[in-house]
Amino acid sequence: MERPRPTGREISFGEDEIIVSKTDTRGVITYSNTVFQRVSGYTEEELQGKPHSIIRHPDMPRCVFRLLWDTVQSGHELFAYVLNLAKNGDGYWVFAHITPSFGPDGEIVGYHSNRRVPAQDALEKVRALYGKMLSEEKKHGDKESQIKAGEAVLAAVLSEARMSYGEFVFGLSRATRLESSIR
Figure 1 (tube, rainbow, N blue to C red):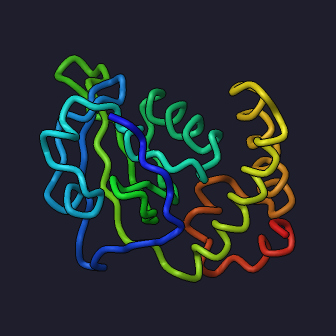
Figure 2: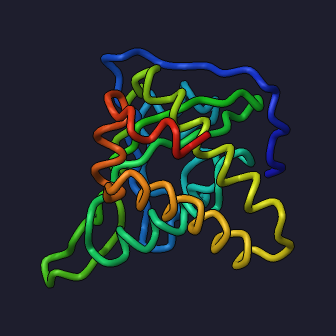
């Protein structure tokens, strides 16, 4: 399936709605709810068995996905702001909560993600930070160098603000200390 070209338009979904998906340990979609299908524009059949990266927007910094995978593969949950790409090329922002799913023996058997509409004031800060990270990533040719460059930007912002990533995510709508760091 060919990846759509971004249109530059943004769509949203209801504040009372939750986008839900489940994947196996490789990130292959095993479940998608009707909200996910409607917002992404893909049918259940088009999503089932496909890598979750089918909705990856090219304006998302690579290092955010590295952070996500490193965190959930280590057995921890992660909250993150993510810009996704619908089948028609429209973008849609989510506030994602990704958790590992454990089997009876305690091993990770997959991942579960709930996504809600993000707060608009938080998105202003996220867009600025992600833009800075993406700009730095684009200065490098290979994927690993891009990720390291984006991680360095994020680490510098968090260090200056004296925050962990979790504090950053949950403090975004009220964190004025970050504004000067992101610019």
